[in-house]
Image 1 (cartoon, rainbow, N blue to C red):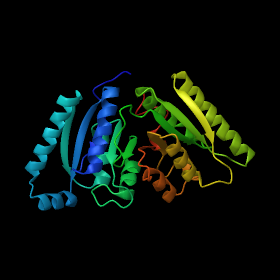
Image 2 (image 1 turned 90 degrees about the vertical axis):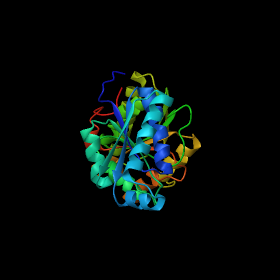
Image 3 (image 1 turned 180 degrees about the horizontal axis):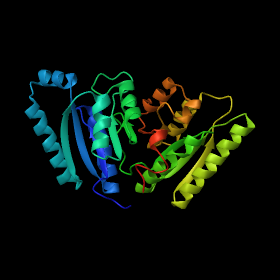
Image 4 (image 1 turned 45 degrees about the horizontal axis):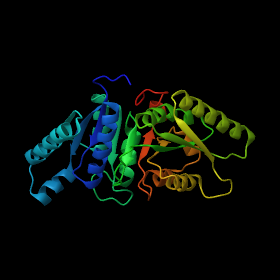
Length: 287
């Protein structure tokens, strides 16, 4: 991979268990990709609650972030820095990602019923507002082998192709395999479109020496999102890749609640979210 100083992973850090988990994932990705990490703490009402509850000052939080960044560098050999910005997570994180030229955000969530700073649908909303791909994690630590097994839904839309270059990059980092989960369409035209997208994905992944497996949605079975999660659990997936945002083709299949079901899945499988408008065949996280 050809790396530059612009290759940075942004980690919104809110002094919570999911934030710690997100950082653990970020360290593993940064080591594999030779990227650097930037911890971003957004100062808002949640921060003030934390300070009051634990009798901390902003200087205390600043020092905590500095020590954490230093420990990442010394213990893992990954360049790390930190910033504190006052504002809203919905604007500050996306704006800082663009300003810092981050190519990936890794953030933690307590899930749909979380009570911490980045909670439930908020993490997904931040992802949809970001101009770079986002990996959303809960509290499941990354395994030592990294993102070895990656599940990617494939449907009939053109946008379905856009996540493949990002997937190929991630799979290459960890010598992983990609499992393509193809939608089953009764319409002949849509079925042919799915097949073309599958062939496109298989060729791109094969060109990068990435092993693939292909499985099809069971017609008349559970909802598409539930079948994806069942399969991901069956193969003990390390990552699921989906498109997000208003322009996402996959939402021809997914409703908003089904998308949340994927992102905040009970198996706590991390989810890489990519916006179609910002995933122009390798514009961000690529090899």
